[in-house]
Image (cartoon, one colour):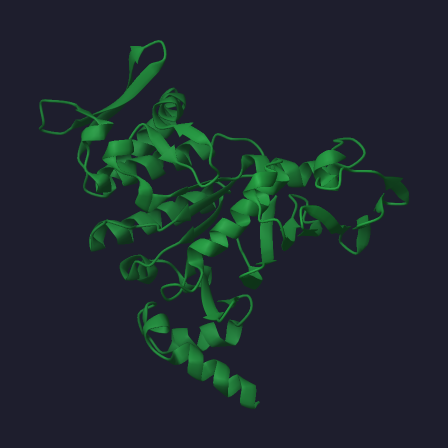
Amino acid sequence: MKITSFEYSDYSWALDKVSFGNLNLIVGRNAVGKSKTLNAIILFVRFLNGDVNAATPSHWCKVEFVTDDNTILTYGYDYTDNVITDETLYRGTDKIISRNKEHAFIGNTEVNPPANKLCVQSQRDTKNYPEFESIMQWAEKLKGYSFSELSSTKSYEIPSLFNEKINFSDMYEKIYQIEEKRDFVISKMKELDYEIDSIEPFKISDKFNIVIVKEHGVNTPLYSALLSNGMLRVLYIFAYMAYLSTEQGARTLLVDDLGEGLDFSRSSKLSKIIFDYCEAHDIQLIVTSNDNFLMNAVNLDYWVILQRDGEHTTGISKKTHPDMFLKFKKMGLNNFDMLSTDFIYRYLEKAKEV
């Protein structure tokens, strides 16, 4: 299952409907709400998973999914002063959940969920309510981290966006057992001009593992904490993707600040490898970036351009504005010029006059 659109609002900020495809690069000027958009999705997921403290006391969400059999699920709720005041779920046009502050119905059956718990969570039933299970499975399997927060000083742990602890050494040990995945990581490191002969897990004790990297022509193997931040970030994301491709069911990866800290050549190559791999392995990818080199390397068809007007952020994509994207492509400019010029502003102003 994949997320196809997302809306969110709280006391200080509102995100109008943003559409997603299988591959997504969220771009926009500084302070427009790129990381904030990912954080809103993360808060929604954590709230689904029962982390009430992760959510603001009052917020609203509406999310659309497409299942593996192309069924559209539209789910939304309103959480006001720590109480669920509204919750709905549609399968296509059929309403499955209908809830307000006083009553909650699943189909024609009235249920009594806790006031601060969602029906999809508290009434979870794989046989009678498979749609609930699909949403919860998606939420449980969603992964995400901040590319820019990876550093050699914290090399043992991936900075998850979901406040969960992901030990890199343990994760790499799992993919190391699969030759195809192990070879993928090394070969892609080489494509980015990191001449690596081997990457191996090494057991220090029963409770502590490390990852040893052997560079070509260098006699002394390096513990991951001794790698440069750039090499470490590349190694982590390749390993992360290889790991996700072994997971069953829904697979969605969020990455904030992709490409941060890499030079022009590596940033451009990295984006192509990541997008191609996720497409080939059916991993839905939603990433943000400020890197103009990376933007130029990623197909405009995958762009989600955020714009902000006060407390409101809106999203523009090929799905929402196909004519605008087609017109820009015909101009023969670099992708980044779509942001650095006034093209979008002029197009939207002209559209208002029609």
